[in-house]
Length: 166
Image (cartoon, rainbow, N blue to C red; front, side):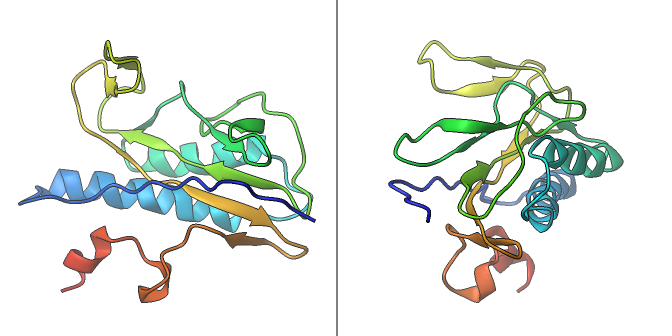
């Protein structure tokens, strides 16, 4: 039985008149998360989520930040498992019912490298290009997973799709 004390979620919003490349970045970022979520079920390896994400993102001509990863959530907020979002990562562990964790890929237009501002919180790309991120907290069930942080209306779709679908 899972005990979740906190949840973690994040979403990129389109603000103003966003060019086609910016929309593509945000769409690809969300789609990489969606594809990874489809892979969450008992018996799958945490490291395989990075392969799913990175394969899709490479096909879009974008890159995956390697400095940050998804994480377990339980009585401690950031705990095991670590869930890297890139190819050939060394994450350990197999998903089992009751496991609760996040997937939160950061996707860049340019290279994958990032740096922190002096506030020790704000991460930016080293090449100055745009980045997008989506995050959900998941609970592994007997047959797949439940997205604990899904939007409660509009069938869980992210907010950026509201404006694109009008």
